[in-house]
Length: 323
Length: 266
Ligand SMILES: Cc1cc2nc3c(=O)[nH]c(=O)nc-3n(C[C@H](O)[C@H](O)[C@H](O)COP(=O)(O)OP(=O)(O)OC[C@H]3O[C@@H](n4cnc5c(N)ncnc54)[C@H](O)[C@@H]3O)c2cc1C
Image (cartoon, rainbow over all chains, first blue to last red; front, side):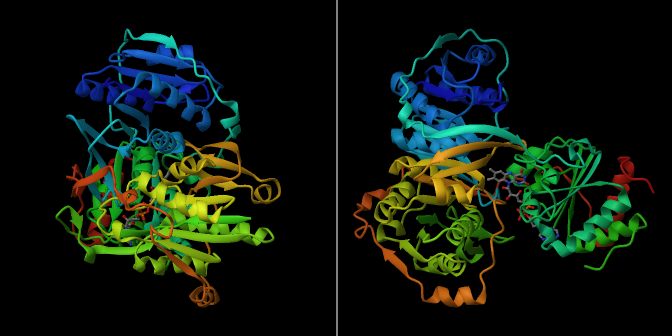
């Protein structure tokens, strides 16, 4: 009755890391509700996925065969059927791009209150979720009076489940309504190839919206030249067309692991941090002492990049252009 | 063809702010058009410019103040706007996804658009669910996190051929039948600035105010299952070593760090 249903995520033949984090979060909730943790996998090589997901803490695995890749119409139908059958207290999915593409729909369809992008959840008869607002400047707690609940969890907040479980694995048959599948995935495309591979760089100088205008980019380029670094950026710089896509660090850009990541005028939004938190040393230059980037920085420079960067260029014998 | 664009006025927090009674005080908030919606408006206006007889209607849920924001959408080319507000919304501290979807669904029913463009998320509460929940509510197809749309195919074939931006530099190519809701990702286009002429024209465009009554909605749609119980500044987990002094002193220390780490010579 008060079970937890977690729906795993896979892409192009592989389970995504967040699926194992989902198991941990799901187990936590199942412990709190005193129920079982059901994990479902929909589409793809369900047998091998179910095998891999059979980690400690999982009570039941449900394999729904249908197609190879994520399709939201299929996921909505599969989740609806599973939910109807299992009658859980919680539906838990990743707050991934695919989560964004079907969780709100299934929550709406089932009439479940929906809390997205939770970084923490607590249950003692009712749900309290912790989430961020205003670009991570504040944290909030949200209380949801009555379940069952739909929650999407932020990647990287729960440790991945480990060990080998002894869950029951069974096929779950869904009577799919083909007419209700009105979207078709036609393929995938890798983007961002190009001359430089920022994921190989040892020293990245990375620029964010703090640079304000394209005309100011030569300042950063001068620093890159003086220090023999590689230039990367946060998303808005690429969105604006000031740098090509292959320079974007983050969730939808590249993952980088340089020895040093110098973040200049970057706030440290979660989707950016997802791409660079693996850097050995993180240095942040930002005017805002409360910018979230300082939470993960090893060295902090609270200051104006238009003062600090020219001075740094001079330190290395370069010439700072007038911007 | 009719395009409905959902826009939201979002609050941005100033660098220094204070929280009292679980809220950020009004004086520390600035209001602006949600970044993601700006791209959605542009995508709508591009459809209008590429097709014959395409109408773009902007819709917002917001108090009178938000007309300023919705005028920006009109100045950029939306033909007219609808603003939903009701006394029942005054006291709601957070409007959950379901409430927004229900309210917008009533507007969709009235306007009967072929395509709805919505931002991936709102920069303030970042729920990221309204567009997709709305699609489900009105029985439209949908696609979330769209960073490319084949405009001609929409106009000629009634199919939204989109790229969905997944994680890690991979995009999914998907065809979605119309009518559909697309949630628009930043970078899909280059949002234009409102021209002076656009701003002038926007003054004479219609912003139709709608109450729940007008839309046949019951006050209870504003009831949220979610309650915001606390708001606080996250405890800083920073163990960063701060480089003190004026800019040149900071730069000198920074240079030393870079030399020490062995990434820069000289
Ligand atoms: C689905 C999805 C995927 C995303 N994928 C990515 C991704 O892959 N990569 C990514 O980066 N983002 C991504 N984002 C966007 C992300 O949420 C942020 O919007 C983005 O990272 C913000 O970039 P920024 O830090 O450069 O800009 P802002 O958040 O605007 O920060 C600018 C910073 O510059 C500082 N500043 C301003 N002036 C100065 C100055 N003179 N000197 C020093 N500092 C200054 C400010 O204090 C501020 O902290 C994604 C978002 C979504 C919804």
